[in-house]
Image 1 (cartoon, rainbow, N blue to C red):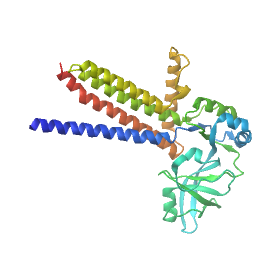
Image 2 (image 1 turned 90 degrees about the vertical axis):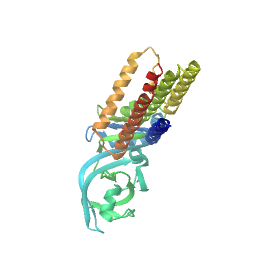
Image 3 (image 1 turned 45 degrees about the vertical axis):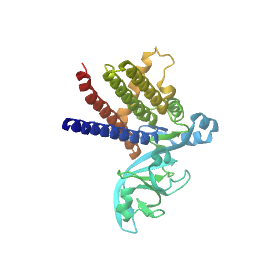
Image 4 (image 1 turned 135 degrees about the horizontal axis):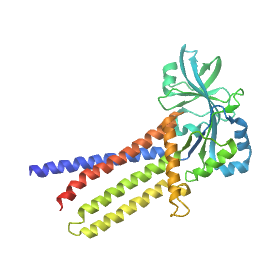
Length: 338
C-alpha cells in the first residue's frame, strides 16, 4: 500500500511537471507570435538614406509589392542626458531618432499613450523606469523633457527595463542605421520581403531579424517534442495487451501533433523546397537561420529584440525539459517490461 501511494505521488509529480512545461512553452510561443511579422535590416552606422523611405511610401506599386503595414528608420545618437525641469532630475540614457511608425520596431511594447506619427515633431517615447526616475510616476503623458537644450513632449511609455529615449525625426538627421517593417500578413514570405527591402535600401551584410523564424522554429520544436513523447509511450506499451493497436494509435497521434504543429507554425515557402530531393536547400536554410539567430544573440538594439530571443530560448528550453522528462519517465518502464 505504501509503495502504491509513493508511486501515485511520483506519477502526480511527473504529470505536474509535464503540464507546467507545456504551459510554459505555450505561453512563450504565443508571445513570439506577436513578433512573427517583424522584419529588420541593420546597416553600418548612418548608411540608410531617408529618401529611400520617402520613395517607398510615395510609390503605391512598391508599397503593394512590399506587403508591409508599417515601416520605420532609426538612428542611434548615443547616450544623452535627459532632464525634467519640473523635478530637476536628469539621467543619461541611449537615445534614438526615428522616421516612420515606431510600432514597426516596438509592436505591443507601448503600455501608455501612443506612438508618434510620421510627420510629428518634438515628440518622444521613454521607457518605464526612466519615466519613474525623472517624474516619480508614470502619469507623464504630454509632459516635457529636454535633450541637449531641445524640448520634447512625452507621447508614449515603453515596456522594458532597458533605458531608452526615442525621438521623432529631426531635419538634421538625413542618414539612418536600419529599417524595420511589419508584414501585411504573418505568413508572407520573409525572403521576398528581405529582397525587396534590399532593392530599396541597398544590400546589407549586417544583422537581419526575421520574427517568423523564431515563431516557426519554436512551434515545430514543441510539436516534435510532443510527437517524440507519444512515439516513446507507444514503444513502451507495445509488449502489453493490445500493444500493436496501442502503438498504432500513439503513432497516429504523433503524426496528428506534427501536422497541427506545422499548421500553427505556417512556415510557408521559405522553409519548403521546390523538390524534396534538394538536400542542399535544407543545408543552406539551416546555415542562414543559424546565422540570424547568432546575430540577434550578439547584437540587441531594442528591448523588443531582447524579448524575441528570450522567449525563443525559454520555449526551446521548455521543449527540451519535456523531452528529457519523457525519457526519464518511460525508459525505466521499457526496461522492466522485458
